[in-house]
Length: 251
Image 1 (cartoon, helix red, strand yellow):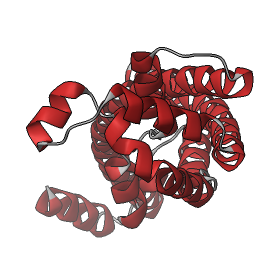
Image 2 (cartoon, one colour):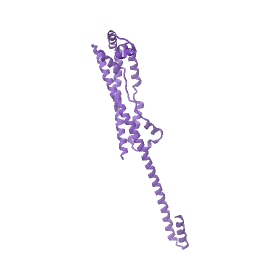
Image 3 (cartoon, rainbow, N blue to C red):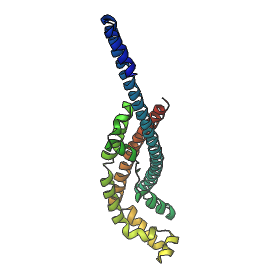
Image 4 (spheres, rainbow, N blue to C red):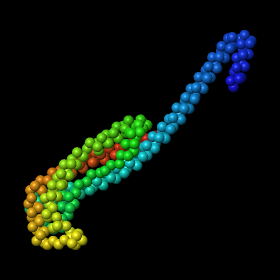
């Protein structure tokens, strides 16, 4: 093709047709420019296609992570609600000082007073996106904001963790000497430990009348109530993130 253009130029110059040569030269320049623009357009299209494919992979991975997070936080909230309910029952029993069934006390102490729950989240995909510098691939600005906010909240949130653990440790210390009386008979048999109803009666009376234990239990239960509110807030983030990711995939 280059040889053809060269021959045409030489022919025009040989015939001394300068005006035609000038028009031809301009046309040739225009063709070159058009070729360059087409090449750039094709390159941009290829890059856009690659970025879209990469974004789709990231969105799918985020959906998988946050669906797992949704299951985890749902289970954590359910368990924490059970803990709060049994803790409240134990608090009411301690405040009323009424006679309480042996199995109820065992259940409330084991399931409420000695329990603590929170969700452990999956953030592998988002962490990898940030560390690799691929966050710009995600086009939806609201999605990036929510991902950043969610990660910041789970890193900076749950500040009650140490306080809750300190309450739990102190409560376990107070109830340590009554633990044999609170363990189920099957467990006692496996451990080779014996306990009598009299042991249980004295242990329960001692525990129920311990105002320090009651105060710790109330404080711990209050923190657990706040934790549920916080986890429900995170649950809202999760639902919104999944919805945005799924919407972006359909575009």
